[in-house]
Image 1 (spheres, each protein chain N blue to C red):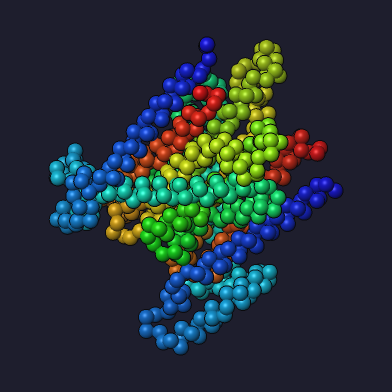
Image 2 (cartoon, rainbow over the protein chains, first blue to last red):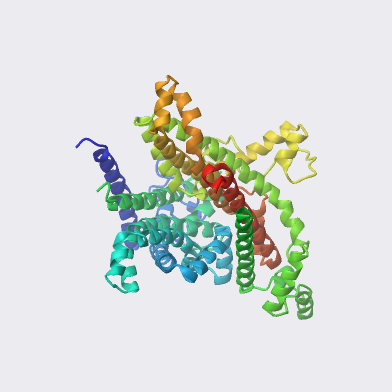
Length: 283
Length: 336
């Protein structure tokens, strides 16, 4: 068989492996942060403030990636930051997926007034700039990990709802659903056992995308000083701090930025890779 | 007749969305802890002063009463008075809106130019390494949101190679003769190209950050539709007539492939405007989004409401315009 699928498949495999490896390493760092990190992420050493990374002159080998203005170890803060980033990503990503997909399935399958109400709600939600909405919600809920997760779910459920609703509508029009109806299967049964499994690949792909978005939202909220606490080692907080001293110590901004970039990229590529893996045409 | 009914239906759903948005914001922000009046008064203010000012802003009434007062005000064009800035909300919001619109439009232009160029390059050199490069660039551009692009641009072009401004809207040292808030348009109208250039140098970094994800989306979709169109018979026919590949792509395939991309740009433009909130903050750009974040931090309830309603109105209008343009451009819908 001479067609392009072989080469596409190889490219997809590489994408899945690369992104999966990065996410795996980050997850391990997050899990074992207290064992791995060379310093206490909160320990200040005012005599060792703004030390450059190891290759630059004037660096201290004890601080591989340098220190910030308060003399805190950038590497240790990055490793501990992975804990918060991955907690937010996993919990908020899954919760958003569940809430949004449920509403989307209901709207797309039940139609009628359920669909009208849910779709109207989505319209209203889409009329808000999401970042502004997030900041408002944190002002209401107060700072902290739980508030961030709630804010992400409240804002981003529409992303799942819109896609899953459309997908559920497509699936409902297919022959296998009609035959299930003819066979006298109850509606609830059709929704859970026929439609959901067929929509699941889409939900999985969207979920990993959402995990990347959750990490970004946490970073944005840290940046406007509304995240967990000013002390906690979050990537967003490090970026915010680095932004203020960018001309004196670029590494305080550059390292968390690079890690955040690769993590968000990996989440989305991992999701895309998974989606293609599920794709029956390419399989 | 059918068209009129469709438009009326559209306007009706639009107003439901807007009123819904107003209700949601109004009640959400009134749950916010922290008394805005206490925050604006000096520390030594007496209980009596606080109570008097609270009554002045109507914050002692029940939430329902407050909503009714606010809603009747809105229908008379009165959005209340900002608590932190002590000025009527609407002039404040309208004063900042032009800065945000100019930034968003500039970003849109950049996105269309970059995205269009990438799509055309990818199709012209399809099935080669160039196309693979375009695909990879699209993938990265799509995965990384504007916030991260903004930070990357700040590090690259603000610090390592300082060629662009990364803070503010215009150099304060210039003498500013502006009477409107549309600085870019006015500087062109006044033939003050020195000001125009300075504005552009300030806007380029934030606009590029907003544009990159949109450019990737445009490039991806346009390339896909172009490639599909290239297989159609009429394209093959024009190729057999001896037209050059460039002519075939630009004059034959492009006009037929561009419609889905146009619709998409419209929808994505509202997302881009939503992105200005944090981008303006990052670049200290004096627009509506930056003002919105300050309003939340100061618990300035009337100002938050005003800004959110203006954003919501902007989004619904853009969506309406997109749908109408689509109906006008699409021959299948025009005669429906």
